[in-house]
Amino acid sequence: MGLREDVERYRAVGEERRQDLADFIRYGDLGASRADAVRIPVKIVDLPEFVYDYRDRGGVGQGDAEVGDAIEPVPGPDGEPGEPGSEPGEHDYYEMDPEEFARELDDELGLELEPKGKEVAEEIEGDYTDVARTGPRSTLDVEHFFREGLKRKLATDFDREYLREALRIDGWGPARVHRWAREANVPVSRGWLEVEYARIDDRSRWDSLAAFEANVEPEPAATRIRREGLRRIPFRREDERFRHPEVVEVPEYNVVVVNIRDVSGSMREDKRELVERTFTPLDWYLTGKYDHAEFVYIAHDASAWEVEREEFFGISSGGGTKISSAYEVASEILAKRYPWSEWNRYVFAAGDSENSRGDTTEGVIPLMEGIDANLHAYLETRPDGSGGHATHAEEVEEHFSDSGNVVVTRVAEPDDVIDAIYDVLSTEDDEE
Image (tube, rainbow, N blue to C red):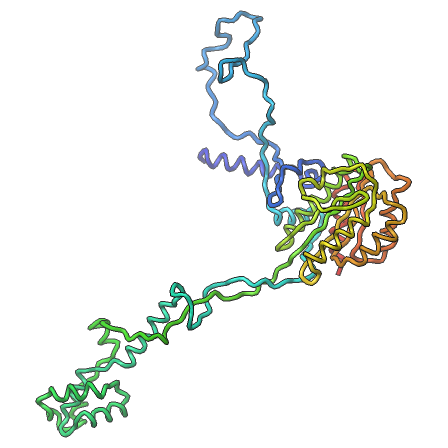
């Protein structure tokens, strides 16, 4: 086995030793990944490398220093002593796309989920199999054009030698030969017969048609063309056909995921991290399951606004809380940009269950009922336990207890994240 094969084998071992998927979701660095590439740390396996033989280094203890002398720092590029490094070391990662992540998460959770909801037929250009009589010259079907011209050549080309001998039948002339040829399905040209008959001196070589047919054999057009070659092919404009791409309808599942997060003063960093550890894997999972996925991020305190993903998990404010404001923004965005007839919809909200008095029953619940979605989910994050005003999750759970597309789940610490993700995805699994 060569060095290159050794390196590949060690890398394969490293991939097998990557961080456990569940541990990665609970405690790993989610920020190292991208929307289209999930990067899971690999437990390092040292790759083989060349090292110097200690026997070529001059022995142990060689040099001018005395025992006990301090070792000078190694000089930097400018000759000055180097400073301690400040950059993080390199890490090895196993990189997977969202499709692979979704399959592995299914295995981890014991689920076999398939995209649900509306199937949208997307029209795409397929192979150039359709033809039309008009089109750009670059799309001319040359093979068809040549084939039609060749068929005409074979159909109209006539055996001159054979017909010339027919003109030598005693008592026959161009008119009689033309009539006989038409009856015998022999290709012929009346004009050519007239011209050629005028050139013939011996017009009685054959005393009858029987004598002619007994001594002269016609030559097939294909044989004649192979012998003489093709000097001219009678192409015509009506032979032209232009290739067009076939329009193919491909079934496509589209999904939009609305992520809502409470950014009020009570949502401290530990709560925000729990939201990120739950929502981010769900985003990757749904990206892997659907053909096309889009995401909307809405932050709210007492009012709500749409934000970019980069600021969604880190933003915080000092305001109060009115969760219905976020559902109002979500309802407007979905109605304008993601019609229910064309998009599968998931609405995921998260917070510590604190809400303005009466807002859950009077605002949030009616808005949730008015937003058509495959699944509504609320993630309650309360690392410090219950609070006196933290009743939002309980009220939503009680109201939608008989609903098949609303789930409430709770996360108090990272160990709860996998169970919360299972609660959400298994609810979607049961929903018809």
